[in-house]
Image 1 (cartoon, rainbow, N blue to C red):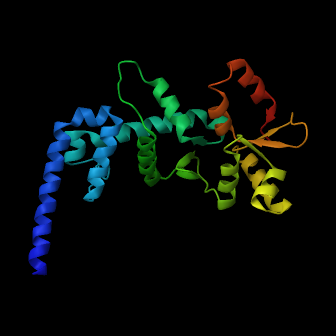
Image 2: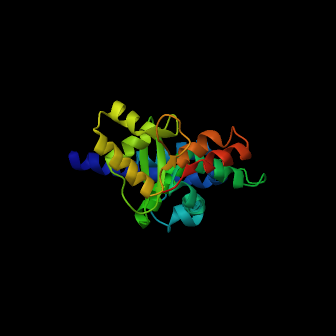
Length: 238
């Protein structure tokens, strides 16, 4: 009885996958251009254990091109990260990456990129090594790390703390995270050394440590290029 049920289940699964392939082929352009449609398709695939991105060969890549979308996007993400790592130390918010990618697209290119698309592409980049990692900020938000070197839990917690204002102070870390002074200073020193944080020399009451990727995301779109430039000049990279 169990054998018959297993055989029936296997047959149903094979039929579902076949219909999934037919559906994907029929709606190929829609999957590439419509982000909601693409996400729905990915969820359908996941429900039966099919990963269109698992291989560059076979039906999904050669006939459908779904995998191609994410591999092309991954290459573009690498280009964005490499072109900005001298500013942000190799760490960017997913939203900033998405904004840069959308600005680089021509008006004739209708593909919309979502946060989910970027997360999937970066997840595939992780297998190549080279430092690509997702750093969770909480609330479903992530930073993309594009340089070698694993961030510790302490580093991640300080970055999470900096998310709202784009900067932290040693006093804020001690107060919010209940750390002692040496622990807080050690984390800040490491972030500055790796180029992930900049020291604000203009702060009036205490030293501020700004996270460039968070600062750029929050202020570049609302400030003039002059004011942003002046703000950046007031910080030092030690």
